[in-house]
Image (cartoon, rainbow, N blue to C red; front, side, top):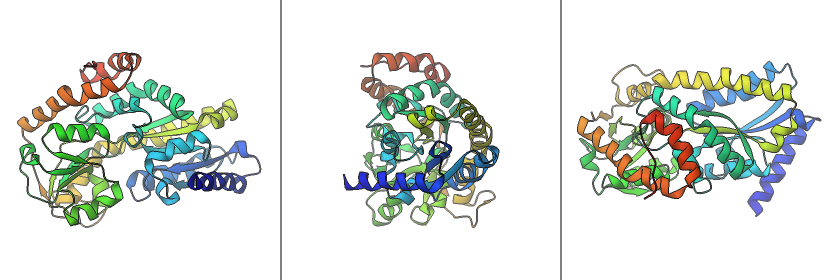
Length: 348
């Protein structure tokens, strides 16, 4: 209760500091401050691009959830309560509150960035419904981190070597996927992973290639398998529904058009090469645009690895998710995402 009261007070203070006309001020909370998505895209867009495009009609106060000291899993709860106006976090962090959102990012469902974008576009109506119902919020964008690949601090040659190993997974579906491969899944916060790898609490962990590089995971792990075992860790950008409805139609149109053209489109364009850049930075196999390359061992995945991973999705992960949502959600998913990826969700 004390934490929520403090955050509510902070939201009110930010609103008062931003502008005398609260309807024209947006208090924005972005995703992880240390990662490229926020540094290169979220922060510049909300701090500079949108206010400039509005010719001063919209002002913003911008921070991130980790800078505020709140868990990523709580971002949409606070957003729905009106503590801030715009919030961004990984959809998988929130699935205990909104199991529908798991259907956006099931492991190995979209192996390439092109397929991942088609999935995001197909899922948009489902995301809007879930965010409105669960968090009193309106969806503005769905964008990815790099493909969520496997870091290990012990030698591996393929998925068979994960048997009985302890692996950090960022979401519930990824955890179920890891266990279907014979490993033990552990839920550890992103910023706690390096210490856990170093101390041997876990053997491996899943995150984006560039995210892992930026966070220094290569300093405590030795082997990298670039198979997208954890999906794409999509980040949903949403605005509090009451705030959205308080804005004029012109402001709503401007915000959505600017988000689409100056934020969503550039992030997806960047995603097409981001995973490869991350692999280059982590292994030294290629040019690293972000700094000194590491020397992790690149583990080539075989056709058998890819087939085994796909089987884990179809036989274990998808049915488990389908059983957690209602028939209406399953039908909507099958008629949208399911057609894109060639899968059918049925509750068993």
